[in-house]
Length: 255
Image 1 (spheres, rainbow, N blue to C red):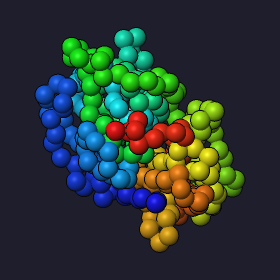
Image 2 (image 1 turned 90 degrees about the horizontal axis):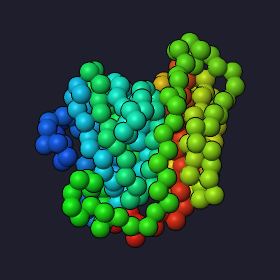
Image 3 (image 1 turned 90 degrees about the vertical axis):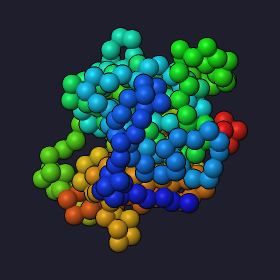
């Protein structure tokens, strides 16, 4: 299937949530699926978290492979304090520990994007039984340099389609790219069947899907049994992340 969700619509339902790791309040938005899950269900799972000033998420892992996009605010990740600023892309295999993630004084917003609804509940490393729950994984934990976006008139009047790699494609199909399209331009996303499906995330401008215009921070999910997806820019152009998931992300590893 192909799933779409308007960023404007999703954010209109933003609510206060309690962090499972800190017990503190911050804000959460659900794009697809449940906010947290411990078993497999059909369809993708995508959520957004807005952290308070200086809030820290302790080191942990999830049972589902995912991309994370740090889209607003500022923060750091890891014991060495690697900077997180808009728009940083992170890829993590399932059962791969990372953190801490610490927000700066202006807070930090990120989205977690999963092709499957599965065992997404965080397992914190300080729990006594955490390491007993680790399973076999490639343990990739990649963090990009920030992706930069164009000023509106440059984006709108761009004359050619531009693809820029963020993470080069690997042997199992995992990859991340930025595509930049001028107003009304169109191109094809990579064939989702050569990977484990893909997400398209609108980072600037808007994306057309049929008659629907998908604005900033909207998402499209293309499952791996679909044909190539047409990327078509809105009236002011679009700059989007195209995130390919690895093949063989089976339901067993998603549970």
